[in-house]
Length: 173
View 1 (tube, rainbow, N blue to C red):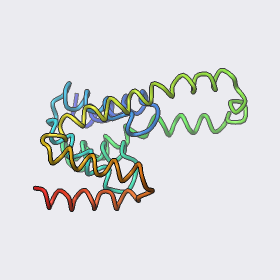
View 2 (view 1 turned 180 degrees about the vertical axis):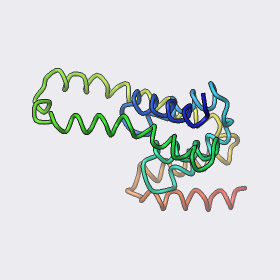
View 3 (view 1 turned 135 degrees about the horizontal axis):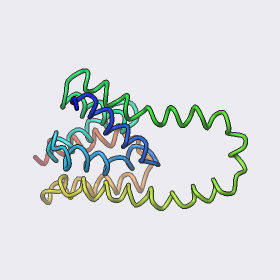
View 4 (view 1 turned 120 degrees about the horizontal axis):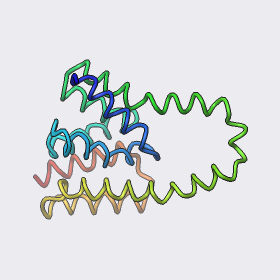
């Protein structure tokens, strides 16, 4: 099977089975792209996540685009991005037609309530996986603590957080 078809199908699967947004997709992307296919290594995956967070747009789409480009150039980024958005596009198009019926559905409400804890688990899993590679020494832990403290104590814009972290990185490293 060609690399473009593989990229499309893998990201279609990731898009279809990841509920809760881009951060919930990160463990699946890591498993498929880093562990199963070995298309990129863990350091490259961490870099792609960092770049995806700094660029405009959803992290899942940005990650798919960057991974696809790394693996197979422009057409790889096109195939991966198309794959990750296709299921959601189809689902939203269908759901839009029936949205009024689903709005009051107790079964749908119960299903969504059951998925929320799973979403948090996926996000924590992504955090722990990324933390293993990011926190390599005392300086990186220090930057993480400073940023977390700033985020929890004040409403700081994410761009400012990235700039502060970059400045701390320049100073400490």
